[in-house]
Amino acid sequence: MSEEDLQLIKNYLDRIEAAREHLIKQSRDIIGLCKRAIHICVRGGDASKLVSDLKYRFTELYNSVKNIPELFYSNLLQSIAIEYVEALQFYNVVKESRFATLNELGVHPVAYILGLLDVIGELKRYSLELIKNNKIDDSFSILEKAESIYDLLSTLNYTDAIVPGFRRKLDIYRKVIDDWRELLIDLRSRKDLIDRIERIAI
Image (cartoon, rainbow, N blue to C red; front, side, top):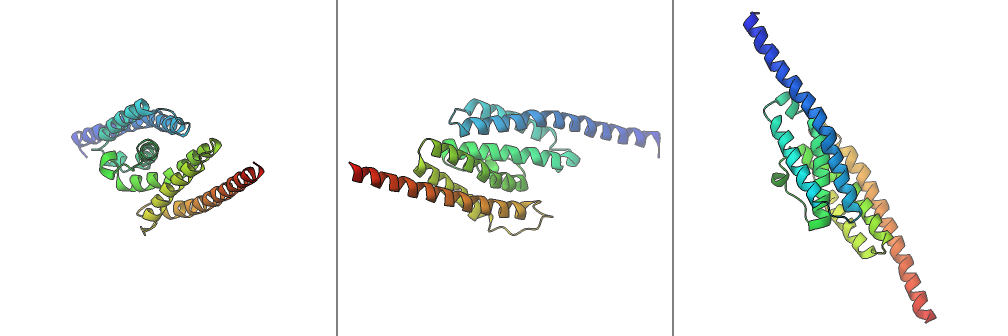
């Protein structure tokens, strides 16, 4: 090996190391923004400015490692992208009653799938928040959106080698949805019974 080759290798690895440190540092901030945006939406607040900041920072980070395969296809970036998809999809469902497309979010397809699946858990949290405000019909509407995600993604049949953790998440969220539906049906039945009793008592 020549000294010239050694220097080329060192420059290449130094570039990867610097980009990785930047990725780690930014990941904490971006994941924090994701969690804050979800929390605000669950509570019924306005997270629009936070989401705009999140989009800008994620896109900037994503582009900064786009030409570094060792990082672009790493578990580290994918975990950030999954959190990002989850937060943005949750925001879109709650505030705009729609799902953002793969092209809109600009992430790897695997991160898109796994992030979208994780939205189901946040939608359940939001649904339970609606129940606290006696909005059972709205809560059922959120359940239907979660079921539409599950039904759509359950048609995919890939191994963990292609979509890591996907089958396990599907199994988990199937039970989440079943328990959630059972809870809402029970609450609606109780409410209907109370309403009937009140009408009879008048």
